[in-house]
Length: 414
Length: 223
Image (tube, rainbow over all chains, first blue to last red; front, side):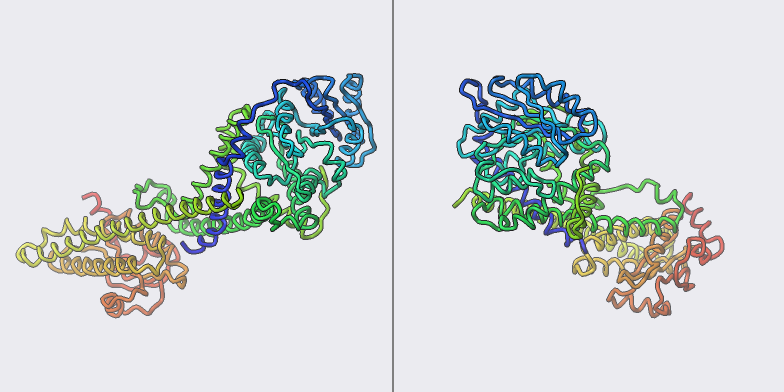
């Protein structure tokens, strides 16, 4: 047993989180949202504007715009606002090719950051009841907007998030992200049912116009404007929902350097917003699910991720060095010779058994997320890659992020 | 009760139930391990008694028992490996494991004495190694020495290796330590009565064996 006991509190917390997720997923509000009908009759549907802020995305923006134009929604009810945030590549030319389209407004702004570009788009969407956003590296399914609008049928809902997945994963890291995103689909669905989402992601989140008139526009927010807006809404007592069948496909960072950059931006954005600007949400009884569970566990997950990584690396190094000294004592042929195993020597401990239980439950949530959102793609291989890489890679950006926040290092976009 | 409070409570119960079930399963498994160890020890204990009795009964031809003691030593070695694994899993403070370890040490001493008795009576020339170690963290080379002896025991099955925890509070073991005149330095080896201390390499350890002893043991393997 020994030092293994140090891991028990973290494992129990993870188990508690998984159990909470299960109970919430099975509870009535989540069931009702899963089974809610999609809007089929689109007459009398709200006026919708979708803002796409673009900064140097010449390779992906065309596909993004085309997918938006293919949305199954009355043309006179849908306008697209393309905001070029001072791109220096071929993006402006691509955008201008679509400028003549009756549904499209193209704006060219000085580079001021994503939040400023989004705000410029909002200013041009005064007649829209619902304003959505889409990152310029993302594509939407044709029926995604119908699903989003259906979720707004509940008048208490002020914003709606979509189900994101990785578009055509190719590299190992993209495959890992594919599995991770399918897990997030279930998490977002379950936690939306108890109004405890703290982020309205860039890819295809929608807001009622009233959100901006009441709360104001987006802020810089440590480059996490989508988290900040969600937290601002939570503080104001607004509701953030989820349309689980509204599928949006985003391009996952293909390389470690790009992934690290993205995740450090997300994690530092989360930490800085929660710890500096929205600390009052932690422990808040006004929204107990968010204040007493989701945010505290989110912070603890960062700490435990780093602790467990250091713990296991230390264990592996210690045992590895020990094994090397042992192996050096005798001929290698003995070490690698076949030693018959019986059940007696199977290394089953609390940690291995509970860890296996957790991994299986994560796998189950991924399968559920993929199934209920009808996300295309094959999960099996991606899950294997996820299992092999995620636990090793995640602590790197967690440590990097914590270090940046502690030292006050400024985070950059790319 | 709010939905959040209800869900939190049910989740706590589920997490507690899963943890409890896993803890029960682990405890059950460890109990099964100890039961198996106990069963092996009981069997070996009967085998030892049987051999000793056999030895006394057939005073005229006691040497017929030699073959069976070789098998016995192999089983004893297997028991030692299992015991070491269980001790590593459950810790050195587990009473049941310590009790089994004491019984195991007694079985080893009895087998060692029987081997010496057979050698004196039948003229066999067994190579015996008494190996003393400590797992209290005060013996840096004990793991290496133990692993090297495991290798030698596997390579030369007729080699009789008896491993003893130097710190075990067992009267018979303390007597053995006194009789072998060990100075407390660990790891310690008594190879056919000759003492040596410390472990540097397999070659150095093999040098401690009587000339041709390992070859003889190897030859026994093929017999």
